[in-house]
Length: 165
Image 1: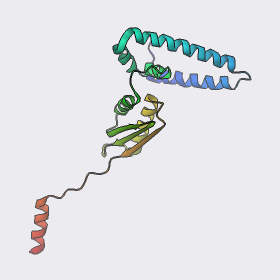
Image 2: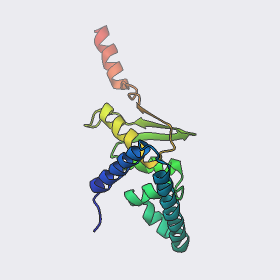
Image 3: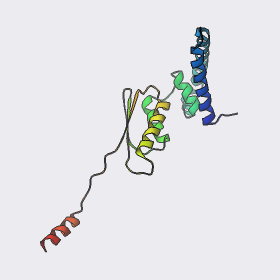
Image 4: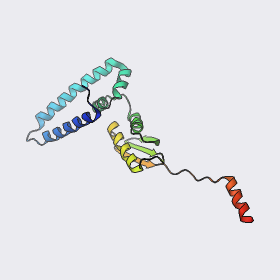
């Protein structure tokens, strides 16, 4: 049975919670060693699957949110951070004018207008980027400047003609 996006996210939250609780044990090392060993084993298995399936399989797997997170966890994701950030912005459903990656900083300039608030769009973009590219340390979201005001030549002529009359 395939998990919904929400169910998968809830399981990830639960795993994080349990790992935090393990860290509070008097001697957490055996449990943490078990978790590391399992992660290493599953990482090796994922690497073998990707090697056997080639680039096409890797791309298809990377499109699945849950599998994409596992690929990131094991440093096996086929897309670089810049492409993952661009895709995350598109998937967030936010109209972006420009997306730039500079080292560990992602800068996104949102288009003006639309029905959603700039603050809500910025929060959605930031969350999407953090999920898609956890190696990005800082996300800067800004709204594009307003377009320049253009006055038609006819309007200027009418104003000048009306002023002299």
